[in-house]
Image (tube, rainbow, N blue to C red):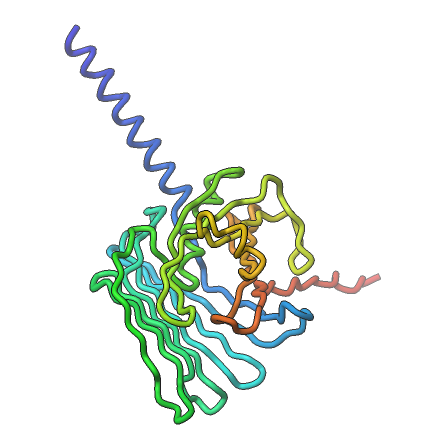
Length: 268
């Protein structure tokens, strides 16, 4: 009798592990090399192009982004996260984002190191030298910065959490180092978007200042992201502010051209 119970327990335990593994495989982070057009949020005009890659290793992952604008400006971003590709909320280890003018001179910079607890923001003065400000933080485990915030959001949306709210902390240079609580809320129903075809999952990202949120809300930039459920919740677009009080931009994933082959001419 005891052997029979042990066998049943072993079978249930194995089944549990299989279900857990299946759940992790379904919700593993997927962020293939991605190219985006950068549009002006004011008039929809094309103003640049961006490229992002996520390199995953057994112990870490690195999200890199490079944006080039038609006026010659560009910026480079790098986020290093711990954990594996099956961790729904891989913690952020470090972040750096540098902005350059057309001549290649550094104009704005941001740094974060969750291990030392330091965040640094810099802006070039009239002479071109960086005026740096560094602050110490007790970074929560749900702290993200820049484009890395899209990874936990993508996973959250992929789990079908409509009507729920994901709470995160976002580091930003505003213009000095700030750690801001944000609420991420998926829309209750699939949405259409003029810049990308199909029914998409839209999430809105809002700063949460507690009691003051209602008063400050009109002055907070609107941030949003769109994911395509037909492509395993692939990120297809985002609306954001390039930097603090900077241009409002829209990223739109580039779509591969569909080549239609003409049938061979009839021999008749």
